[in-house]
Length: 263
Image (cartoon, rainbow, N blue to C red):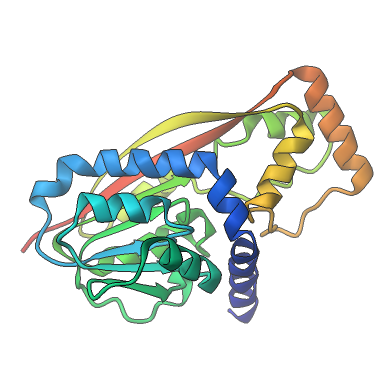
């Protein structure tokens, strides 16, 4: 448990130090946040009364859109990184109905149901266990409430994996959630589950630019301890560039809605 907490703290610090870069360069995350809000609109009129919780606010991509979408709702806006929370608060401002807090889902102990809606964009993949973390959040919903999340799934970065396989190099990407496994586990609870998957592509002039991008936005922290030395990284980047140019990277994005059973 202590090792897990230290790792979570390291991840939070990595994102916190990269907040400005994240805000400027996290294009896929911004695009997915917009998609998440669009997918929420059909549910708007059936949500129960109550506040909204955002988990993993980052620099506020989803936060600002949610506030515009629900101007009369109270918000609790959270992230595991205090630096990210402060950045979002500076961008959007704290009010009597808009609170900013540090929250680490893995260490939640109380799951009192009090939220009409819980949203999260590109954060669930960092939970110690994605399904367990989402179950915890689901328990915090009021009857009839909605948990709506988006995260990169385990079919992301197929091109990177193929290059590593061809060269016999370790694939050092962090493991990403298996959507079917997450859905099966959540379905055992009091939820109606709906989800869809969408592949988004990001283009870079060279493979090394992709690896730099991951580090620049704070997502380069390894959860596995695997790494390539400089020679291996150069070999991988050269091979990828020779296969295709410009380099095109796939993000397998999962949008998941879990509606809690009503009274």
